[in-house]
Image 1 (cartoon, rainbow, N blue to C red):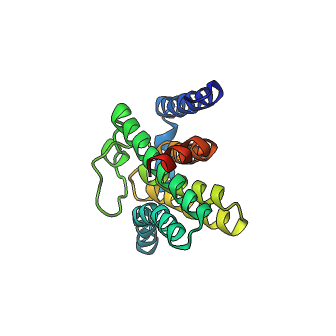
Image 2: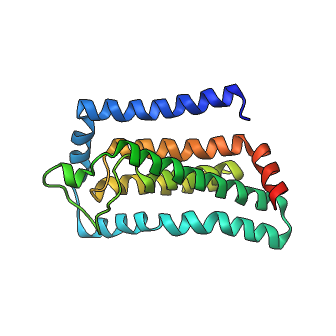
Length: 207
């Protein structure tokens, strides 16, 4: 069972994310910020942002699996366990993100607002929180916690930040969706690594 301290952190974290969404939506700050960012565009930058957005899925799947596979082949227990934690965090992040999407069911900005510039194909899932952003920040945080070196941390978060920004530029998400996605992704990773002992003990017993 989780300690009471961890439970308070988890509950407090998700209460903050929900209050953030309510606050941004009710004050209409999100829509104004979205329009200010989304209105400036060019074909070259559109292609760049679309590439960044499309990079999330392969990175999100390949990174943890490659760590597990490489750790097993090299008999490197640290790398293997890092991959296991990344995989656990990635699965938990998706579950949380899409559960919140279903529960809140916020309409995408290109559907709710007029004159929105969109790039690429539109998406059917709800807007809040941003799944691409939560995935990018989840992976960036996992890598940074596993290997806390500047040459890992800086490019990881730079990539995640560009992914989040790209979701606004492409017309897919409000800034509040992106901010919440970043918090969920990073928070899920942090809690996973904080609870690594019970998680790894359970995994090692099963396999």
